[in-house]
Length: 174
Image (tube, rainbow, N blue to C red; front, side, top):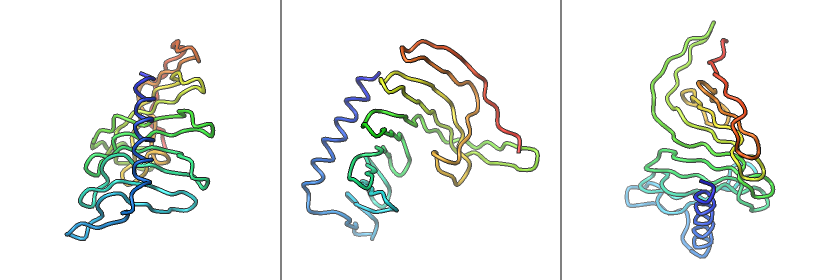
């Protein structure tokens, strides 16, 4: 599986180099929607994102203030497919994948949350071996990095890939 991720990242870097040689960025289609490659700044980060008819589509990159790739995103017709984050040494840190639309309402003690998305988070040891695999649910209107909860089985591995623990995670009571 690690070879697939390495090939995916290599393909992303190749596409980024190809894009940097183009002179046309931030264009609109005939309907006035974003189309093609867009370079946008948000805080200290720069995003290079592909759009098709106003929707994010294809591979996108998040670069830090030094111009180094911090995250790689994959979209399909406006829907997130995969998010890959790199550490300071450009090693695979964690990935969010297998996004699935759901419509689940969970009641806490005083709050009710509606989850619209379920996804898997895979965290890696610095040597590239999987450290943990968890299932997450995203609160409606939130972002995967901040507004999600681990619910269901979680698997934890040592740095050699041996399963060392399995936990059942439950929605926190509010």
